[in-house]
Each structure stands twice: as structure tokens, then as C-alpha cells.
Length: 122
Image (cartoon, rainbow, N blue to C red; front, side, top):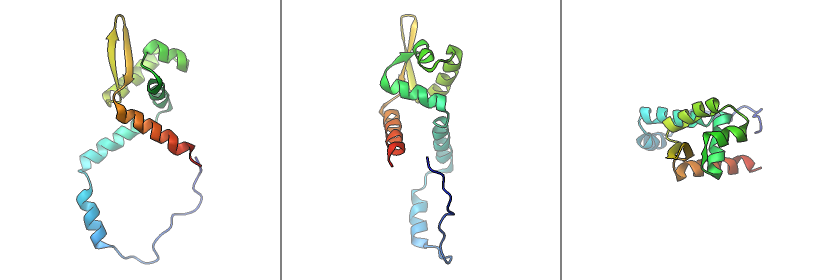
């Protein structure tokens, strides 16, 4: 990702476009929803969680599989999966003695795919 070295552009004079401000203000979600959205995206800020999500984008897996692929301890993977499950990004199901994890829904797949598409654009 490129670093921004130029200062942001600013208006040459202060003039609030009241009709725009009014219309946008009507569309703004409640403050609590915006905090929840920030928490949702904060989960994506950890590279280990992103790796786990990307693996689950490819295939349903158990903790052992994920730990092997990421060369990490199962306890560390379990900790991250717990966070991802609390944020409703992954779901799990028991198959015999194994617990299989997958992405919670198509929204998560779309977010990962669009994010990857965005960073690959240049």
C-alpha cells in the first residue's frame, strides 16, 4: 500500500452546503451501529485472523488443519477462532470428534474477495 505524502486538499474558503449536510445526516445510522461497524472491521485488522478467514474461504477446516497450514499452535488458532465466532464471521459444526469451521455466510466471502481485489488494483 502506498504512503500518502501530500497533505489533504482543503476548501479555499469555508462554506457549508447545508442541503448536502441535511440529506447525509438523515442517512447516517445511529451512533451505536457505527461503533458496531468499527468493531466488525477491527477484527479484520489482525493478519492471523485474515489468514484464517482466507483459508476458510478456500475450504471448511478443523483447528488442526488451520494450525498446520499457518505453522501455529492449536491453542492460538482456537483463540482467534473464538474471536471470529463472537463477531459472527465463522461458524462451526461437529463431525464425529472434529469441529469443522467455515465462513459464516456469503457476506464474509464477498468482503474478503472485494478487499483482495482492491489491494491488487494498481
